[in-house]
Length: 241
Ligand code: SAM
Image (tube, rainbow, N blue to C red):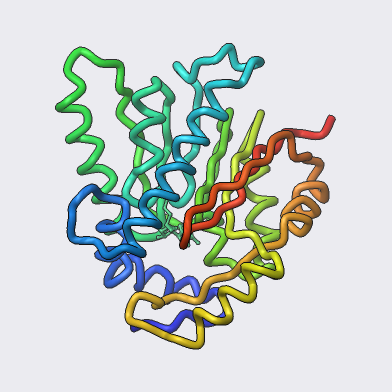
């Protein structure tokens, strides 16, 4: 197993191009070769994706549609969110630090496109690169379950950068740092297994909120998604003014 120290990006990249790619492709997929924990994480994560789509399509200001709306899916993984967004007609720019992840996301989109004969799926644009190198302006920026790879010291800059790319809203999910989850994580760390290949960072909601406030953003909606082994805080932020 690869040990990730101090948010070392190179190691995270290597992990998600290798063992991490295989592990997460399975978890985010729909095959039967997953254990109970992986199945539970798959369920939790799919709830997060569902909630994001609901959050974005329920938006009254946005006219309840994503058609033609530009969305940046930062750290897109295998495309679990990119695909439903594209199906809703959003113009998606999807990127990830891992070339393997991007290739898999592209493959899955092509598959979805083939099944979508006569549908309105808009082909997303894919890019291999880290969050910090993202440029451009998007109506909406979404970054799901990526903050877990960032220590709090690096999270502020990452959040500020994502906010600078968003014109109207920023949607983030992260593993919340609460007494209970912190304890759970520490206990988990006492039993290292082959699946625990990266260091995971939890984030206190107030730290994320403070990072957003520093750059003039405020949290408009909050949600919590939990299953037995998956927990994510989901927030939607908008410019404060
Ligand atoms: N957002 C996707 C989803 O929810 O299905 C994938 C989540 S997966 C747990 C984390 C992803 O973040 C991996 O695909 C990994 O390669 C990517 N990642 C980690 N650090 C990154 C960075 N600094 N820049 C871009 N992507 C990164």
